[in-house]
Figure (cartoon, rainbow, N blue to C red):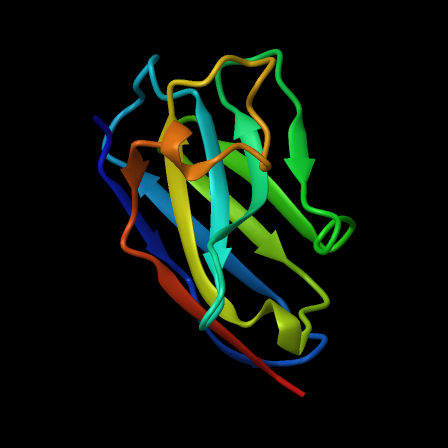
Length: 129
């Protein structure tokens, strides 16, 4: 199990940027698929971006954020990031990071949440127009 702690959320204007951080308590070789999810009020939690941190994997993005968000990881600090540029009001949500024992071939933001047993507490992002 990996403990995850998100930070970096806040309130911004449309068009501005935020960078979310997810500090992991350790590198766990059984938790190499990591991702960002978000949940808007009254809606299901949805995948935003995933990255396989074990090497050889690609990053995948939901269509709604492709070209605006970038997922990355600092290996030295075991920190996952989500750089969010050109934010829109519809990006307003609670953002969570998650980690799961998913193979490189299946690590994708469309995977169900049950594939990710480890979650952070979330960080709120609010974008006003």
